[in-house]
Length: 173
Image (cartoon, rainbow, N blue to C red; front, side):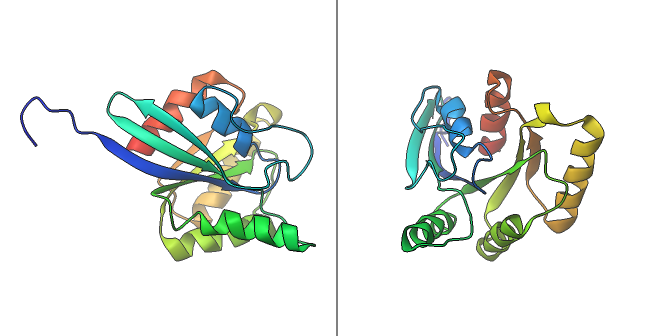
């Protein structure tokens, strides 16, 4: 690289997790505007939604995926497949879980297996930390760290702006 030139990076990041863990809320936070619908209703996101973050030395293309759930219809099967098929196409995976979880559920195990298959850099995002006590959060982190070696584990509240830069910086490492 020439002296004085700033290295420019670009890459794809997939947000994946079960339904209602806050993927769309996080995408909106990272992009800085509402690009994905947010509702307390399950399966609000039915297709992959893209959001782009331009920074001084980088461009990050995010893909918000439909929530992973047990499909009961052809539409549900397609939604789950859309989510899983985005993992191999990404450079980084943001795997979102809820802080209120007490163990790794069946859906999260399935997601972890897909991540393991693709060997993508994965950051565990534990959302909704405002709903639990510190001890509960620390136990959850320990459970997930025993299951998989994440690049980083970031506890957040996706509605709080202060976590945006932490996540963006970790993606760039």
